[in-house]
Image 1: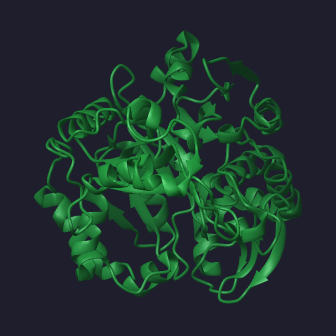
Image 2: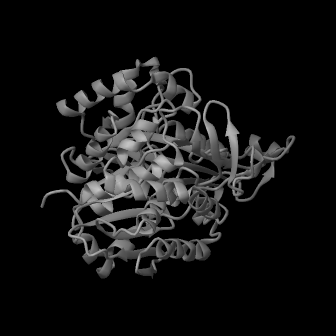
Image 3: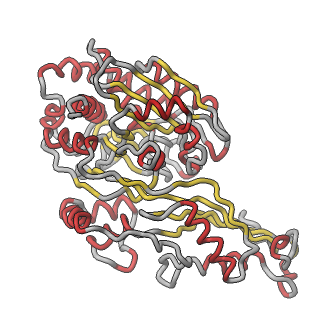
Length: 486
């Protein structure tokens, strides 16, 4: 983002003091992000969760939330916080305080050291697990609150914050957080909910998403005990001549889940999927001209798209096609060298991505029925988390406010029907809450769920927002939300 664009985000003279406060607090706000990255909360490993919840509550209090409450669930806790600024309108914010696992051997800097390094082609970046997913954007939003208060101004809207610590394991208990009577009542007083994000590509283009795919995370487990064939303990591999293999049994089952081209082949899976409407196809036509295919391939580390499809067609598949993905396969010995063992148990970790009007429950039922029909009913299907897809209308006020802020900064964003990834927005958009929900925030980062995840602090490309620009984008958005009618 150019300096002129950054200034236009806070162009009004009354905003100059806030802009100065953002600059003055730069080291403080980046340090806050570093502290957060250094204290991981890993739901998958049940590691640092209580500390992560406590830190989330402290960060909210420090940013001006007057009331913060730990919400117990059947899993890890959520956080509910409110900030009453005496404003006419109230906006909801969704946070997650957990992060994905990280193998230090795969990283150029330790994943929880929050190192700031120079990255060729990007500039100065903060490397760490959670840097962009999702602590960086969330810390930028909190920095906006600090800057507004530090400038001696009242927040232009009241805030309701709902946070969870299980997003990275499929949010299995977030519905319990939102079902809390106090949380539900507070949300119903809001005009909508948004998740602080950094949807700016390294070439400077900015995206606005009108929803997200749903997801099912599950394990498929094949075992000699459940199958009634093969060994019930690991045995010498010479027994393969006289025993069936649970590992091959799993592989054969997995092969039925997709066709020869790798597309879903689960009976009934995707039957409810909606095709793109005429308006959504127009969005994709425009997006294909605004977004860089080369940038997308670079970020994905890819040289060819599936089916060798052209750029425009890949965008539609990305947003509108359900998927079946193998996250990992584990069976037998996986250490150095060989070990002639025949494993009695094999596990596949899967995720299924869902589009409207598919459902989490429907996808699991289809998967189980598909396996049973083909003689794989013994294979355990163990869902670990997930949720339905979500959609918000393009003319929802919270979306129009995003577009207004960007237009004022001379940024022409790409508007897309949905995010191909997932977040539990359905708890907001579905009954009984039925709120508009979206993602917003400038800044660039990448590497979510992968090694060397980063968030750009000082970009080398002037079209990309700096850290201070990302903070300013949230200030501008909050003030724009305050102007909404109704």
